[in-house]
Amino acid sequence: MPDALVSPWVAFFGVVTVLFAIDLLWGSRGTDLRAAALWSAVWIGTGLAFGLWVWASQGGTAATAYYTAYVLEKSLSVDNIFVFVLVFAELRIPASQQHRVLLLGILGALVMRALMIWLGVYLLARFHWVTYPFAALLLIAAVRLLFGESTEQRLVKQSCAVCSTWVAWLIPVTDTGSGQRFVVREAGKLVATPILVALILIETTDLIFALDSIPAVLAITSDPYIVYTSNVFAMLGLRSLYFVLADVVQRFRYLRPGLAAVLCVVAAKMLLAGTVDIPVGVSLLVIVAILLVALVASWAFPRHATAQARP
Image (cartoon, rainbow, N blue to C red):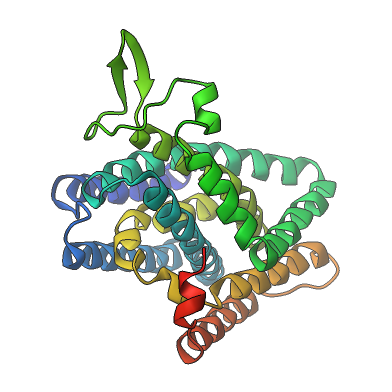
């Protein structure tokens, strides 16, 4: 029995550690679009292949839950890229320095999400009523995606105003960059550079987004192994995916409404659990169908140039 419990985790962490080490040593540094695309394909391919291993070791039901959680997390993580692009643009962080911020931000996010996932699984196992606030979080997130884009952009820009950002309440901030350094000494005092402000804002953003995505995945399955592995594979490819999509992400005009619809579907599944049994396979098909419609609509009805230029 202990071996059965340990082996899946050992296999997962083994694969992730090896690939992450290779990515860290030879992966994209943000200046080579071809390398970023290659590593995005590697991480996506690994995430999909891992689902086959879940199927072989735990059965079709677990594999379907994994794929549903993975697609859900991957699609929601693209929404992070909208904010990442805005943060780096406002703080004028060059592409050659962005990869380090994203690397540390993602590592911090994985630790933070692990704690949140275990807490969420524990609460759902102990208190059934937690289902309702979790579903409410999903519906609030759907409203944010539909109507909160301009407010979100304004808040990010305010946070990126180096001299007045809330980060300056914690540590003095300089508006002068210093390469890859997070802090420098000015007039005998340690001050934060814009790259540290970017890292703090990205970590804060992921914390907020995790309040949406983790309850969404918990609506699909409460198995901590499925929830965490799908999160990790979705997040680890985000750094390379950012460099692939940074210049084109604004063209996904209907992605946010599509994600809002997905969150509403998942919230309904969570609220109806125990009353109406919605198979995980049906949830996967519905989520994929919504995302495909959003992507096709974005391609068929692109933003006008004036709309893209509007802040």
